[in-house]
Length: 211
View 1 (cartoon, one colour):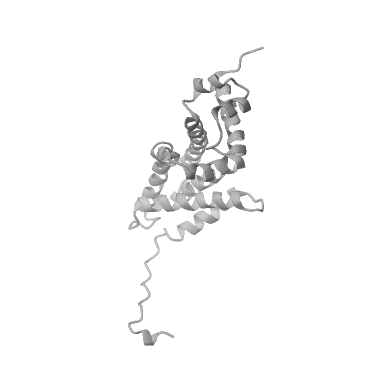
View 2: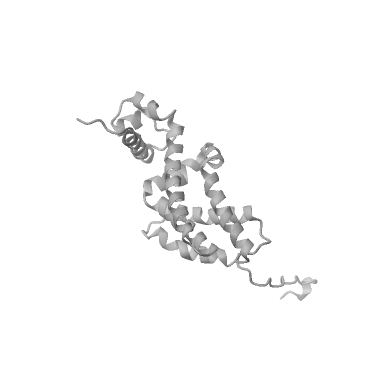
């Protein structure tokens, strides 16, 4: 029997980990459970991963890497910052909706541990840098409001997409998550476009003026 390539063995372990995490939860799952699910010896796990934390971080990194690669490819052919932002939204939602079990793992298990700090300092950095460049381009060309702090815009857009994924996994109904990419981008850009500022509504000076 031909020996499986090393990449296949690693993928086999990651797939086994998804099944175990989905059934038992990240915190109660053991490395031996993952090995059993993947059909490998316990010691084989440590040839590819340092520990259980390294496995879940690698899962996240793999999904994010594929998402970023596809988004960057589409962005290269996009002519406007809006189209680039839409491409990022589409691939963000597509990456997590491809596997509901993986999305549940990311949106629930990861939020309950210190893992997010490790992910935020490494895997998410490239994603935020990509978003930041698109926002910077839009502000530089006048398509987006230049006075808004770029970091705030990046965090807000990511947060909007993140919340859509959470709502999707919690919803009792089934729908195509990627279909929301354009509506959420349009909604978000309603606060980014370069229309003249409207004067703020003045508060009434006297409480007696209020009806």
